[in-house]
Amino acid sequence: YRRHFYLGKADGTKADFMRWRMCERAFNAAGGGKAACVFDAIGAAQVSKASFAGMRVLHRLRQHTAIWPFMTLHADRPTVVEIYCRAYIRHAGLRGLKIRDLDGLNQALRGFDCDAFGGSAELSDDQTDVLITAAGLRRLANQTEPWTPAGLTPEVARHEGWTFGVF
Image 1 (cartoon, one colour):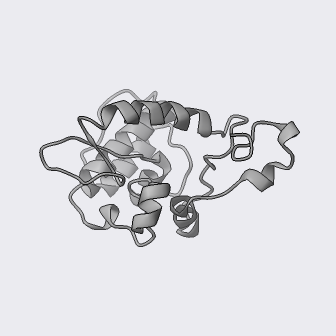
Image 2 (cartoon, rainbow, N blue to C red):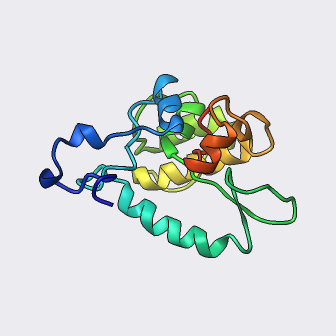
């Protein structure tokens, strides 16, 4: 595994391990920012350790759910998708990385034609990420474009997957 994942200085130059999936390239090219590379296993921005844990969960779930884009979707089965909250902030018409206040949250919710949030004014960026992403998923789930983004070829779907909402 060491030749695929950057685990520290002993592996050499970190930049040599930063291979971007097609989905991450599409997100960055569309102005989404800099998505984290799944091959980086070091530091606060690493996502590979969580990806490894997620793969084990998905392996168990696949008997009862459709895992997009790897499996055929069925109307009678739940569907699991990978999401990146920043994509939904962008789809709501905002450009910031994090939203930590009620005004920012409600502005994002308006971008998805949702009612204002009536909860506490003290919100963490994790809480606003979840609320904005849920509103975005509700809006995008029945549209064709998120399920068939231009870069999602059968080969990419089979070998890399895709993050729902990146198109």
